[in-house]
Image 1 (cartoon, rainbow, N blue to C red):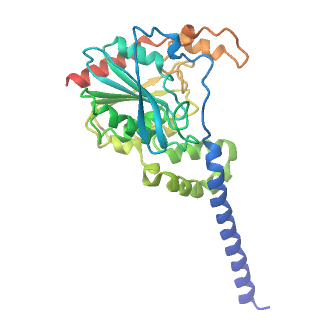
Image 2 (image 1 turned 45 degrees about the horizontal axis):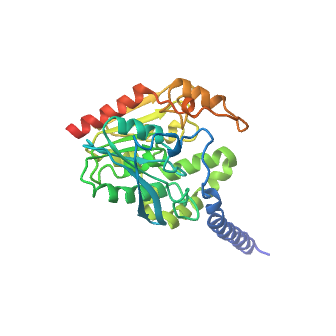
Image 3 (image 1 turned 180 degrees about the vertical axis):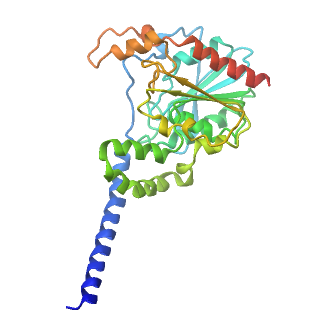
Length: 326
């Protein structure tokens, strides 16, 4: 057999191998994707629920929002002579009560509030959480409702909700956004997380992950929060935690800001207890208390686990007040 035939055979084998691997990877991504984002119908044992607060002081009205995967369970907390409406954009898997301590704080500060359970959570429809970009589509549904209420709108977003808030900062009728522990790009965060478990194999599978992400969300699944903020002319406050492992600093919106926008402010929480993904808004004592809990802990003191950091929350409300008065 001459060298040309050998070379052709080797190239053919390589081509077949590459094509076979590609087809298997595409199929694997399509099948495995829903398993990465299953429904979430549970809440942490330390989380507050509406039954834990004064219903008379904080009445709410149940409403339904129409998102891309079906109806979302939502609640509107009205306030007499409200100075604005805070839309709570929770992270992927968040339900209506995920940020209840902050909602109470906003209500006490003179704001009305709108919250919702994300797709695939609690009473909201959806067979799964769909993916990291779905909270942006859910937030769009919430803003459709908010824009009909004739109040100045501000957004308090966390994680995927913070990413979502940044994407709409220059498109919707929004006065200001506070983005806590938000990631810049969904694909970068997924790749970073996959490398933790799969190492080099995550790099090999990255193109197929991106392809599946495109199948699910189209071009929106690749949007950069930081690039969008560079075009925004509304006040934005970006808050990061120095010990955030879910959205490490390298994946954060703050890390990818590449232009000087005078409307964007940044704040870092450096406390080892508070600087984690879901403790940034907590007091030092509450964050430490949560860290001391384990799965077998009984008789959890919910009040102790949900005390807010007054300095941070005052910074947030002052930021909103200034934006609305501008």
